[in-house]
Image 1 (cartoon, rainbow, N blue to C red):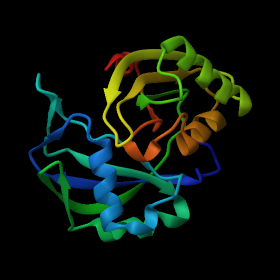
Image 2 (image 1 turned 120 degrees about the vertical axis):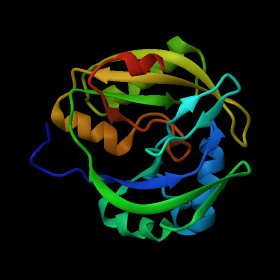
Image 3 (image 1 turned 180 degrees about the vertical axis):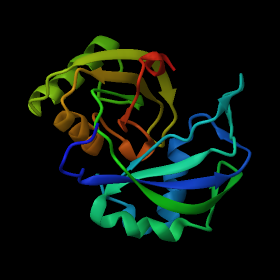
Length: 204
């Protein structure tokens, strides 16, 4: 369900044409987006969704015709992303052509999840405490469920990320979490929450 007031952020979704990229591609993807749109650098409200596909044993992501580049951005800045259409991303040597983009509204659901969330603490119990502290600071009451850990490459060295589900959210809290995320490195695909109807994704 959706609240009466629209969210302050939206997702801009671009169809992608390509074959494969590294499974953990956040750093490469953000470098290329900044190359094409330098004005996004330093905007901490921008969140780049991980690209999804079939994962091989070599941690290669095989892309289908439904693969998409999705960027979360403040509503008033959505149009600044449209020049990405027609451009080529080079993700660790793998070319991706960006097709037309469209704006998608954020929807409020009582359960949301993120594939990767990063805080200053790589150990799971300390990570969960960090997340709880952030929720408390925003006066958001919900239940959280930590899932599988991941080692994400970055320029500063590997980061430990966890998949994370939040449920029993009010509509207002759901949109706030999606707008602002949790943890660090939203530009690298971390802390970007989406609705889900089951909790299977938290273990992905």
